Length: 367
Image (tube, rainbow, N blue to C red):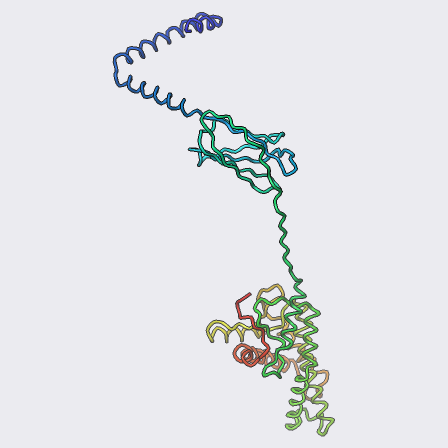
């Protein structure tokens, strides 16, 4: 055998022959004496031969098959994953060819499992046993079409959600009498659009209780002869009633509708209801000068502050000349209006809900 190899090498030149001969002789000089004189190496060689004989008894085999769909057509590109024997932690995987076929070679004998997946089809598994040296050709494995599952999530537009929440708010009355339209017991209520803000202001303005309050204030003013230029008798009362009602309507429409729409701010008070009494009180007072924007973020309450100033200025159009506001009085009245808002917020936070039978049932902090 060596001489035949040397003969082939001779075609490449004599020097190559000399080198090969020298290496061959060197190897023979090192190996054969050691094997003859060293019993330990002889034992190792015997063990290697035993291992080779054992491995021959565990000859690996192969697994082949074809993947088809429910109509019997082959499925190219399907992924086939093999988990077998000692390689269970190192699975093999292949893709089927254009004929839907796959092959795993050099598979150790023993149990095995195939997992087949393909886009649009349900995963399929196949288990079997491979014997030593066996070339196992599996019957075609069929994949079923995956079940189509469609999830439909109905999401109402924000305007519709706000409309429904506003309907609940319009039923809120303290002691069943006093309207409480501008308080939300839903912490993450949908923002009102401009139309809804004006609609809420209109319903507040024409509510019977608004007329009752305006009438009561006019009676007190007449009894104390406030705005004396209006005079007494029925005519004076009517003028006082009209002025008081105009104050309420003007402040509501300017602050809670027009400016709230312009600055995109929510005119409602959002009930807190959690935390210490001190934190709730500070929250209520702060809400006289801050508010929640239509974007859900807290911000300075431009609409309410400017609304009080505008309403105080507008009153000069219908109050007697000697009772009209100058600039200083306008700001003073605006400050009184802001203070009144803070007091109203405190009542909303600590008293209103317990006396409002139709208040929203949702607890604060629960979306």
